[in-house]
Length: 150
Image (cartoon, rainbow, N blue to C red; front, side, top):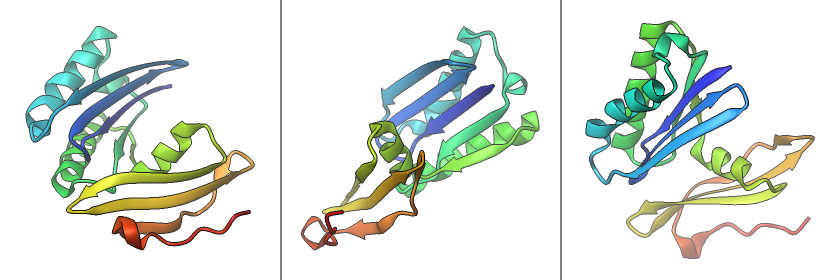
């Protein structure tokens, strides 16, 4: 299976390419230049592996939380490429992806929401699947919900 993933919801532009069991990635501190660099970088990543979008099985993108403009960029590019190649497009919750990448069963995911706030969610993994998010939302750091020990 070949899957292209992209995330432009933070100051970093991240691309991933899964080809069967191998994974390749590009991470660039893009600031506010996501819209300028993401398509050339996708082309570069696919070209390095002698692929084009029609060779892909799916495209995934970070659907937030994060920068509203950044999410729109990733969503627009993912759906545009997916439509053109007639392949599925999958929106991925950034907090859940962060939790999953930890390899742990109990995880608190936090992303800077700027302006003194954070995106926050807690997850518990049971039978290789994360529960529905606990307290997912935007909080001021001093107003975080209390989590019970279990």
